[in-house]
Length: 124
Image (tube, rainbow, N blue to C red; front, side, top):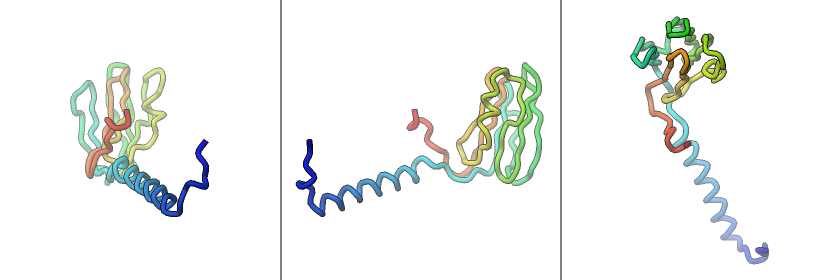
């Protein structure tokens, strides 16, 4: 086992600098910017692009029925969907650029754009 007596004060400073740098990089690289609009898709095609600056309720018809998308206070969410498991509804509010909620059975999605996107490929 590594003995703590071998660690010098400079080693603690180096460890602290590394931890702070890791936290800073995580916050910078994995947080998307503020979103300014939502792209709503139905059946793989763009149904509508809407600004997040206006509160509204949008009904989108898919193969299973109507999905309801709510936009409030610069955030968007799918509030109602006829899909059986309700994964897209449970995802909750989207507020950063690059976030997306997809209802696969009903083929409806909402994606936020603007600012800088989150890098999802790094998360997987």
